[in-house]
Length: 411
Ligand SMILES: Cc1ncc(COP(=O)(O)O)c(C=O)c1O
View 1 (cartoon, rainbow, N blue to C red):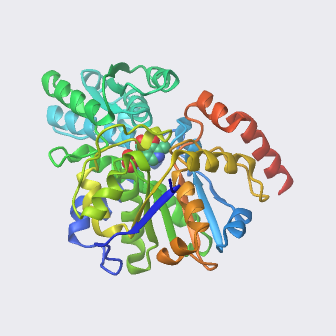
View 2 (view 1 turned 180 degrees about the horizontal axis):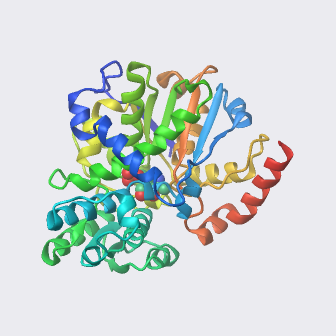
View 3 (view 1 turned 60 degrees about the vertical axis):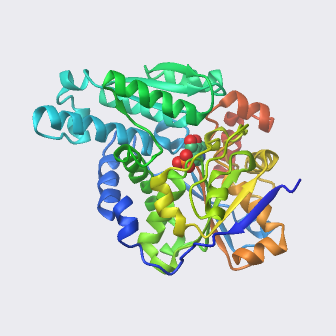
């Protein structure tokens, strides 16, 4: 079996402006509003954009940058940017309904409307990171939280969600089954549903989730050397919210100078790959488990679809062992770069790059060459520390220790 499959998106429209269709999903103003709120939260700091010149040279490209989301708000992944921001927006909306005025997140953090906020329950389905982020948002803003997890979520990931005070319900079946089960319960109980995916009926929360994610891309753009756009983005996709948000921010900022954007998914759950090839959303069913648990989704988010339908230039699938190789490569840093802790789902973009870089035909098909500058979003660190240790053969703490030594030596 090939370790990857790559195809260009027949509907890609690289020279089209970020127009009305895209702005209807995610407008520049919504991206800005999210950035303003999130920057005011306690513990906010841009995550590091790490240059990997040794690996870039080994792969035959000019530059490689890795946005390391493992330190985001102490949650280990980029997810609090989206889930917790959507919790804030939902809570503020409910307070506005009751009191006539929507509070800012600063006002909520300072205890405004505390008694009203306590009456609110937010809920979500998750295969790990989104639930942790919603639970963290609920605790941060003071409301109740119920999280539905799938059968395959590890006990460590379950405990990480419960640690933020959320009630956790283990639901039989897949991620998509959990999405439906929690939506039905929210309807019955009057809870505020915070999905990170949209079936077309629920749009506000998934839009807020995507708006929050765009801050990660905005930070990266500011951190890139000479503010020059990269030539390529390899973006891992589950329901596609992250890839769509990043694509949207680069599209809106750089118009036709935006990078060539490749969606990367595990082969077993490649709903984006199959949907882009078909030209319409297609669900993937059956056994969709992957070591890249955060990407194990069988259905695309329809909001994300509206952006990536023409915004994604290519789609590819990778096999699980490629992700493991990418995790180990980052940890070991054999080309003299800074060692990095990249989790299973967080390294899928790198896995895609590794696969393409070693294949002349694939390189040519996406224009990857010695002048290319690639940007990756390392969307999680060791969010499941035990699993990370088992898969990489070293703990995240040990890798961070070698990174600290590297930093000391390069100072
Ligand atoms: C670490 C990580 N990266 C990427 C993704 C993909 O995000 P999306 O589902 O928005 O495509 C997820 C989703 O849970 C994730 O946990």
